[in-house]
Image (cartoon, rainbow, N blue to C red; front, side):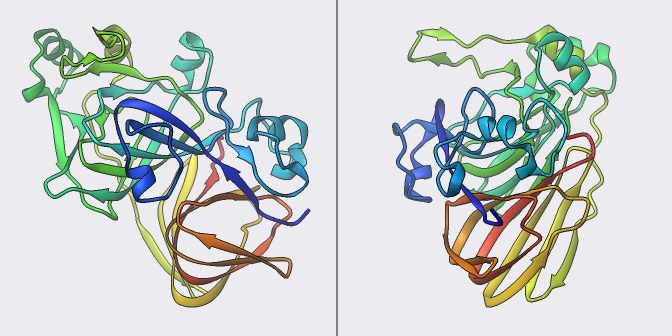
Length: 322
């Protein structure tokens, strides 16, 4: 077909969610407590739907199962990546995700390594990212004592920051932050601490998963070493934030000009989200208008594409383990 596949997102309401997915991106959201836009998703908890072309109406999971040639005949039972936008009107719970081995054994799905590109952050906003325990024994002692002040590590963030969150990393997106998240296609989360909040819908505190968390938390926490690389490619500034076995994530920026990109031979398909600006995408001589909030996949048979306008996009491709 040699054409991009545009997707209709799936929205998740959350007790910590807000309405910035509507005010910032123009989405029609189900309520003023909408926390997550599952933008490019084949996960059964929220599959996105193809909006154009011969596969219009199929969700991404169905397309993956029925037309694997679209993805370069990539292997695997499940589409490996998931792109989200999260709006944290309030703090998310402090949580950790398992690796593939633990998740497949205990949850029956992939583990979850993820990363965040910060779209917006209120002044003074912070993430919880890592912890201060040096041994598993110290970790367990601080958790059992509820000594979160001494255990949890907080880092300030601003728009444009990027954080890589490997499985086993204690983390929480803080109040007043919006992120674009690229992750393995998994919905397994172990909740370590939830600020003793009560869910208004149930009148109960949300479930914690202390033993599973202790099992999978990396001790001690070590910040991953990231080698951010910035290149000018035919009129487009390409910033590579991370290139791992799970995914590669880049930012493509154009400031009122045109440029073109060519797929690397070892990249079977590309996921793209428009996070700012407007312009157009040209594939095989056909123009597609782009605006903030759109998400699309460049299938395997799209080997080259052109971009024009004032645009900021986040793009990802699967890694070797995907």
